[in-house]
Length: 343
Image 1 (cartoon, rainbow, N blue to C red):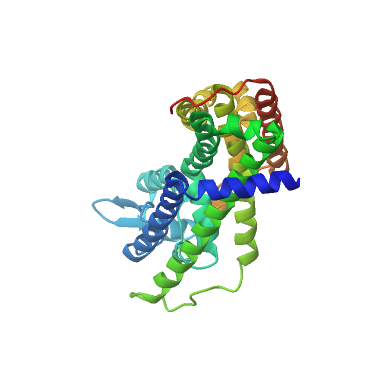
Image 2 (cartoon, rainbow, N blue to C red):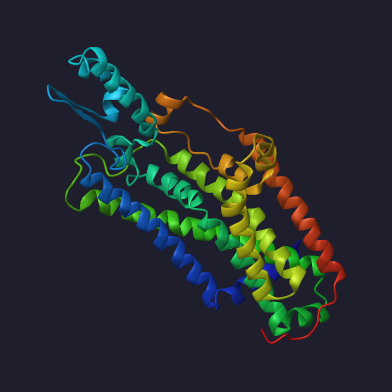
């Protein structure tokens, strides 16, 4: 263990001099900031919650009505359409019923405010990053680059000739990548915290507290869950590099895997009911369940509070991590390591 820690420290001294980790960190922070200030703008340009939730409007020769999502949630629809009768009332009722499911995306003004107010802004920022899938690609590229450069420069062979064990090197690489991912998420959380305070100070002021006393434990828990959810992707990026012994090919396979799992497979598996079991076994699906943030008030009212099985998601993520690391270690122990590859 002492050798692993020394190798990990040595890896950190090498990684901090490279551009890629800092570039990935900058991208992560910029994306999270874009979402936070986007929520800020939406809150101030929208009169009633989310600008995506348009009201239902009906106009006839005799009367007109406008039904909002707040009317649906507060059960004011019947009173608003009471002015109609007969066939016209049925038309309005059917129109409202068809429009009503769209209110599940409705975000109230209070919920929208919490998106850029501490500490909820930290949890929301993490949840949004995972919903975009982009944050999943970053640890794979980081891990692939970390080990791939050793193959390209030939320094991995030099380390082995100096007596460093193969499993020591591999474990130190993975441990360092996980630490860098955790540090990157922590820096992102600090940046979100600073921006949240600024958003509460600059005009127009909301008149409320800059920081809420509740929710800090949820933010810390969400941060820890985020790190755990990204560990298998760190191991996956390392596996692709060990498999190909190339940075370029390892990063390429990481990108291809990301695109297939996140963008290609979900719509294909949704074509048939019997494929749902396959979808539940995907790593990305279990990461979504693990990072579940709960439903908005509107979706809970209209659709019910369906909760994913987070224990199953935890075990599936752990299984992926252990199996992928075992496969990576097996390959790394048995394959020859050549000299510099010129990458």
